[in-house]
Amino acid sequence: MAKYDPIQIHLNNSSSNVVRMNFDEVGELVGGLPKSAFVHRAWWANEAVGSHVHAQSWQRAGYKVAEVVLGEYVIFERVAGASR
Picture (cartoon, rainbow, N blue to C red):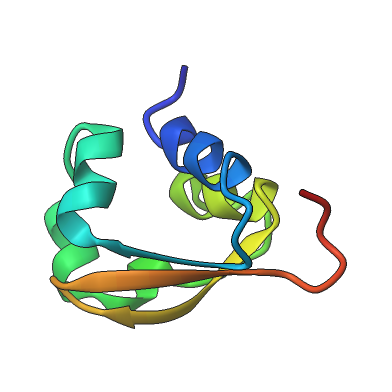
């Protein structure tokens, strides 16, 4: 299992269209977030699949990052038309 696969699994198991997680919760899933996740908003960018493995994890689950407050929380939102 790849480091960020647990994010995909967590979101796949959610029946909610909006999932709010604090950084501690995300860090617990993946064995810790890198410092860049705490200080660079770009780390949370919804990039095209194939670029960064962490972004692939939520995109494969059919979600995008809708909001992030660095060091505090991230809100994932299901992409319109994405299956559950």
